[in-house]
Image 1 (cartoon, rainbow, N blue to C red):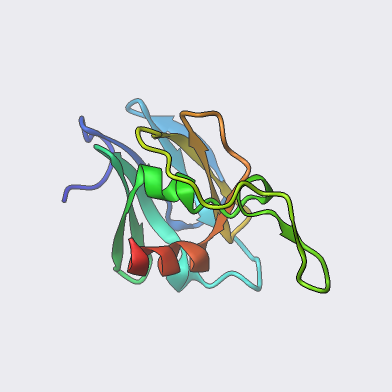
Image 2: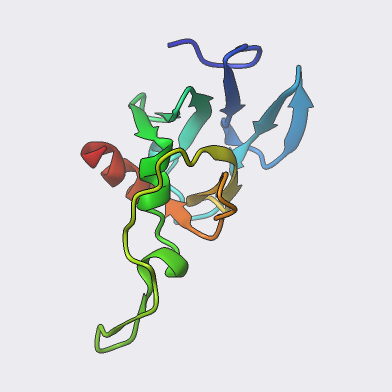
Amino acid sequence: MRWGVGDSDAQAVKAPAAARSREREEGNFMLSVGGSNRHFNPMTAPEQIALLGEEVAIRWADGRESFYPMAYLREMSPSAENMGETDLLENRYGGDGTAKYPGVRVTGWGIIGGYAVQFHFSDGHNTGLFTYDYLRKLADRA
């Protein structure tokens, strides 16, 4: 796999764990993540995120690479809309539960703080915050 700026068949994000800044370079969106968040573990942060065909590819700071079918990410979105919410007694309210979303694509994403990725899907869904730990667990199941 080839990563980085200028990939013609991939929308790539290079995310070095240094400063927080946004810039455009050669038509690809570049985003830096990191900073001084004391709960942030730079070894579990994504270094690069790319859209490759029907998959989202993530290269993690520890060198691991993960690949997620886009429809699977939509299905597993941790949003209240998708999964519902629970009260202190663990009663679940709302949520459509996991459903299949064939043909749904990831159209963009953003880094939230130093702990999560918010994906934007072609069906308009964008409220799930995928923590880095959750994404790594999903990679083991995908």
